[in-house]
Amino acid sequence: MNTANPRLTSLCYIERDGCWLVMHRTKREGDENRDKWIGVGGKFEYGETPEECAMREVKEEAGLTMLNPRFRGLVTFVSDEWGVEYMHLFTCTEFTGELIECDEGELVWLPKAELLAKNIWAGDKLFLRALDERPDFFTLKLRYEGERLVDHRFG
Image (cartoon, rainbow, N blue to C red):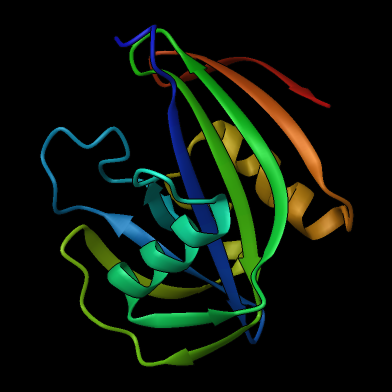
């Protein structure tokens, strides 16, 4: 576990016709999100802003160019196995391009309600509900022991 350098990431949920674009992470060994369903995103590259990271990751992984992504929240993950991650959470309803095949997993347009029934992190259920229920920017701290969510707090 890396305790000195927290990871900086961006994650985006692109919405179309009541569905989120999500990735079923199945293709990388050692992936902390292996077999989970998550949005599209990844780690910051040097000097990137959260928006630049989200735009780049969505283009690289999904082949889509986001138009007017909306910064919705900052989620702090604290894990006894994976260290600390500050995830910048975006949504987007306007985009151009066509989906491409991703080397990290299968991309699927999934109805929002169905996503909550998939294999997702317990904390993801909290921020996904907040994306639907809260129009404002929010912060959320999630603390995990292994894959078990042991504490959470909205800011």
